[in-house]
Image: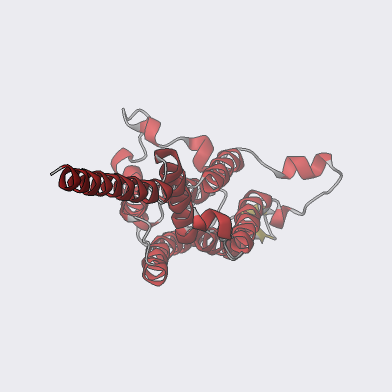
Length: 280
């Protein structure tokens, strides 16, 4: 009886020890390959989100596109001189509603209004289609509905406000026709700048936000101020025929240079995480 009790006790003890050892061993194994820390998971999620945003950034295209459209408008700002009288003048024609002063002021020819209406419509539509195509390529689509709606609403307002206000200076809505901003016919870059600000919000891009803000400031200066004065102070005397071009060329060049820089940056291959970081 004593021998059997010891055998049972020994077996039970051994089984108990084995069970505990097995439990401990399994627990030790589980502890060695456990889940990552919450802080590591959060940092990895942030890194994935940042890589996704960089992958979908494609704002170089609208910058270059609107820069080219702005520079293409230069011929419309060449000021013809009537040789007999020595004054500047253009022959106006076409529907008055399409000759909105938001597109063509007194110092610009009436044909520039038709150009800007077509150019802005084409630019807004082409940008929306570009982001749609780009989203299909990378699998991440930037929401452009707000940008598209903003562009179309601004164009409609630019056409309708002059008709609603009319030529009466005493109209209660006359504040909607700020003469200083519309006199040179260079208000379309302001419309482009507002659209770029909305696009920067959709892109969640700090770089595009800075570009759009700087471009908006330059456009608001170029609309009422004669930038030819700056060239005159530097000793460069522009002929009367091209005196209005700096107000158009400088905003266009800013878009082209910014777009070229964005193109170079966005074409760089994205850096992959180190093997040690992947192992973790």
